[in-house]
Length: 126
Image (tube, rainbow, N blue to C red):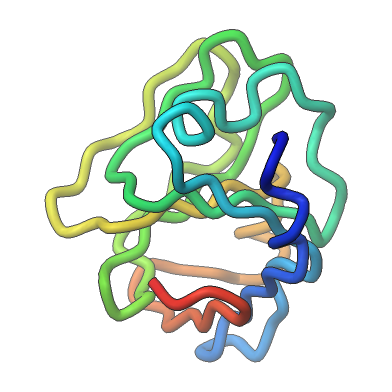
């Protein structure tokens, strides 16, 4: 994402599970960056992620790989999870969601992340 490299210091921790979900993340805030998301990108590596703000739902149209999607409320709590959302799908819609965290497929399961978990985003307040 052009213009987003300055925010590669984004880090996300799951405080409930004591797990680091993202060590090197990016943020999509502009309309175009949010619309593009991970389209045309290589698959996320372990420890990478994309935080989309504001956002309440996602799509994986034109993507070539599945992703885990965490839906976050204003308190950075997980209110929903789409595990391994396949290409050409539409994620769920949650009214109370203000941000979405896209992760490599399998990250939520590998870190035991569940609905209700408290996350902490470092490097950017939601």
